[in-house]
Image 1 (cartoon, helix red, strand yellow):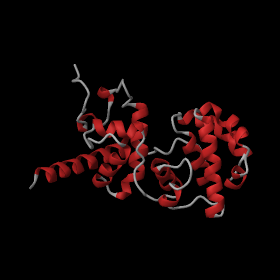
Image 2 (tube, one colour):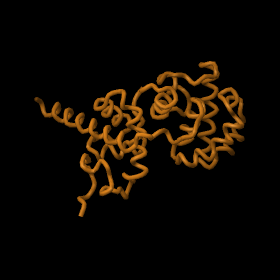
Image 3 (cartoon, helix red, strand yellow):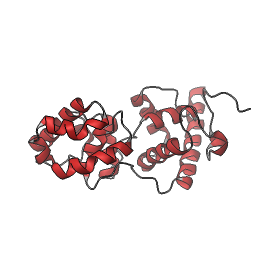
Image 4 (tube, one colour):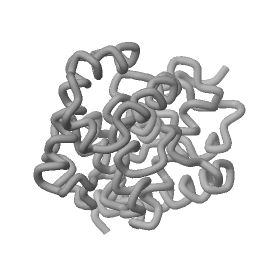
Amino acid sequence: MPKTAKSLAARKVAAKQIAERLAEYYSDAVCALHHRNPYELLVATILSAQCTDARVNIVTPTLFKRYPNAIALANADQTDVEKLVQTTGFFRAKAANLIGMARGVVEHHDGEIPQSLDDLIKLPGVGRKTANVVMGTAFGIASGLVVDTHVKRITYLLGLTKATQPEKVEEDLMKLLPETEWVNFSHRLIHHGRRICIARRPKCTECPLFDLCSRVGLPPLS
C-alpha cells in the first residue's frame, strides 16, 4: 500500500478515536452563541469575528430587541447599529455587513435565512465558517466543518492535518470524518480548546485526548 494511503488510513483511525473520546467527554457541547432562530444565529456569528462569544452574548439581546428580524435590520440606520455593536470590535465594518446581509436576505430570500451554503456565502459578511455554523446549528445540515482558531490549532496538534489555512484544514477533516460527525466534532473541539487545550498553556496532563495526541509542535513534557 502506498505511503500516502497508509498515512490517510492512520489518520482516519485516529480521527475516529478522537471523535469518540470527545463525544464521551463533551456530550452536551452546543454552540455558545445565544440565539432563538437562524436569523439571530447568523447575526451573532457575524459579530463573533475577532470577538469572544461571551461579549457577543452581552450585545445581542439589545440588538435583537431593536431589530428582531432581517426586515427590520435591512432598514436600520448604520450609526445606530454601530453603537449597539461597538464593543465587539471592528464595529463599523460589522454594522455594514449586518445591514448588507439583511438586505440580501430580504431582496433574494423573502426575509428568510437561506438553507443553502452557496446562498449564505453570497451575503455580505458571511464566509464559509459562518455559513457552516448556521447550516449545522440552525438547520442541522452538515455542509462542512466549522474551523475556528481552536479547531485549526488543535487538529494540527493532534496530527490530523498539516494545513494552516482554515479551508485546507476543513478539506482534510472532511476526508477523515463521516458527515454525521462534522457538526458535533467542531462544537466539541471548541469546548475542549476553551477548557483544556488552551493556547499557550495547554493542560496536557489533564487532557482526555492525551494518549491520542501527537502534540505536534509542543515541547516534550518534563
